[in-house]
Length: 81
Image 1: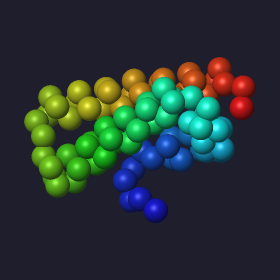
Image 2: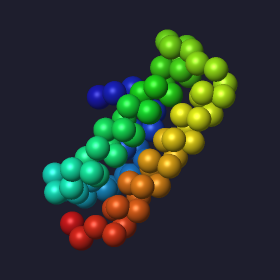
Image 3: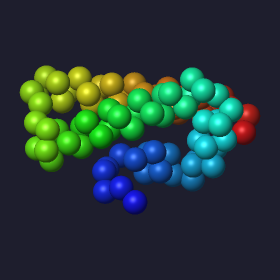
């Protein structure tokens, strides 16, 4: 299990089955999930100083993660899984 905060399981509790079903059914949604994980990992590495970035870049990454989270939430709310 990852020690990275803001995993999909934490952000969407009780919805992992729906996430997996939608991921299997929709390649575009699967790509959004991959992008979320990539951005989330970048934020974690920046916050833990493993790969420091400028404050502006960290803010940009946080905004990107939030936008991706919104896309995931919208897809889940409109999905019939």
